Image 1 (cartoon, rainbow, N blue to C red):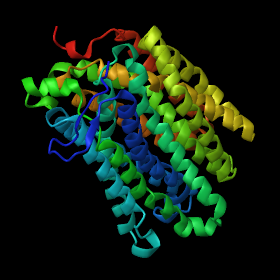
Image 2 (cartoon, one colour):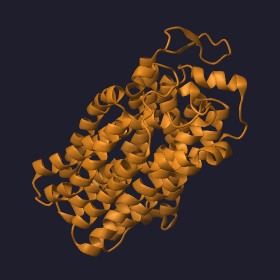
Image 3 (tube, one colour):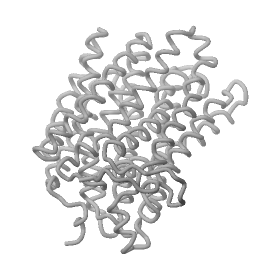
Image 4 (tube, rainbow, N blue to C red):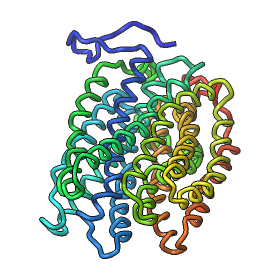
Length: 443
């Protein structure tokens, strides 16, 4: 169980204290992940609403959107690189310092997007600069999740590890909720022309303020006891190589369990906006309202599912969520195609409820797969490998499938396949609820 004592946060006698209480540490991890995912998802939402017109003009609106999502995927390709680099330093130098660096890098790149000139101003240089910023975003995000989860899970309370480790996973839906909410608010108070011209830049500029808040919270939390104990022994000098050589099965298994969760999340929360506006020809507010509602459902239910996972285990939650993904993949598009706002909201809300079930156990499960010396590298690589293979491709595959088939049911089959991958991977995996993190890899 975490203690309630405090220690100097910097080791330099600065007079400030580093918190070791789990609620404070969980809040710090949540704040940081929410800020970083706000930045990352803001780009994704803007790809569907803004970038396709301002940076990738095309006669076919869906082609412009496809190009915008292609740069969105570029950010995912940079994530494994960020996972490798930040994972190395996180295992060598510490979880806390590495997380501060990733947050700063994400904030700067997002703020720069707010200042970028458009295609009409500087031509092809505009999308090139946008891609560069996106690469930096992806690189920074690659090191975020693993460290945020470990900052909580390695502080103790093994009986409620899933609950505490779930709080960083609230960051993605909360960040997406903030991104969609800010864009919806700006769209509501501004004319469409003003929003397209300069209003969207406000949302990206707000990142600077959010980063300051996230940094303030992260600067005053303590390094994890497990890392401090491992650093004293220093069992490996090259954690990345060690985790790939010795734990590649865990990396692949962990990544596979996320396929249904990750592909579903980006279809339920991102592609749905494109589908509603470009295919169903409904207003932007319909898709944004559905996403905001669904993200709110996920924010509330992730900790609740995590409490259940601490009682019954990780595998039952994973299995139920994977089976639900396979079924809901087909119900989802049936509801969307009704063009009824209430049905669309229900479709997205239930989809993100399924995501919440997945997400409630990922933090604890991934932490329980790897020993302390390579845990940051292992969790980051597994998490971001799934993001590349499932999440980054989901919107692109969805658009391509719809253009080929003319129906959403081809996308349903794709999502059901992703759920099946997660189902099989979960059946292969072992229950880890009773694992002692200090003993992982020792036997």
